[in-house]
Image (cartoon, rainbow, N blue to C red; front, side):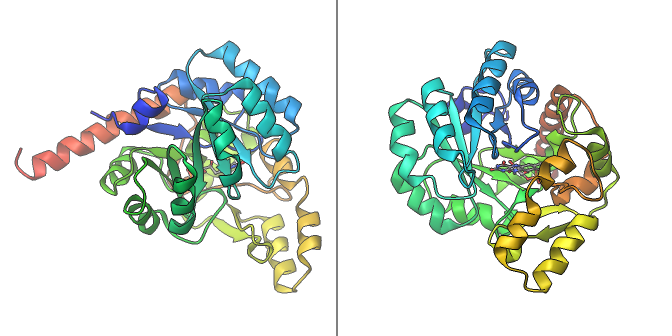
Length: 315
Ligand SMILES: Cc1cc2nc3c(=O)[nH]c(=O)nc-3n(C[C@H](O)[C@H](O)[C@H](O)COP(=O)(O)O)c2cc1C
């Protein structure tokens, strides 16, 4: 019932993508998602190219299903990571924090499917002309680096503006959200925060627990002044960022202050002085379960919602 154009494009069972997440989307999570019928995506983040290659090899040992790599275009290693991905011929590339346009032809020549993350209609239109295969339209309720438009407003506008299939991201964690995304014209969903709260994710247990205990209003956005706004749980560090931004601290100083903080939060579990990336949907996530259970519950939930909607109209 839930098969869409995205399933055919990537050769996957369910139109559920695991967002490439710096530090925490490693081979363990990626292979589990792909094995459970979704598309796992390695988060290259700001990691060195050798690490990315190792993760690709590790993932291939764990699963024979397709998976992707997310390239963070602002990474100091972005160029080298692109070369690794081309050499390794991974099935799918997603990109974050920038415009991958100039690299699209080389990915296409290598037979790699390209699915950039966009937060505006203008960028989607431009990249469609560059020949991408699909988009992730990501709303500002997402965890991590965000744009300025909500998922609800962004998705139908991008759907109306491009011809290639689109995946909605930002605020999804259950079957109701999945059906809502499909109703808006998306062909699937991408989730980040929900997959962090999985058994297979290597994120620190304290960070996962903080996500589970978080309420609907637990996140704030830091980094607006730098041009790279980031949604994370409010903690001492996030408040310190805001104080610095209000004091009109220079962008360079704020960027410097942020170095290493994401790793400190996500991997070392420092709940006060680490950046705890989180989407607004964290308020609805109340358990840590296996990736397979997460995906199966979403698929079953979506099918139940669709049946209910059909019942509502009397058949
Ligand atoms: C911990 C974390 C790290 C992330 N890192 C990246 C990243 O490196 N590149 C990227 O394109 N998106 C990144 N994102 C965004 C996710 O891939 C995904 O699009 C987003 O989490 C979807 O919104 P949700 O959190 O409401 O599910 C990250 C999100 C989280 C929660």
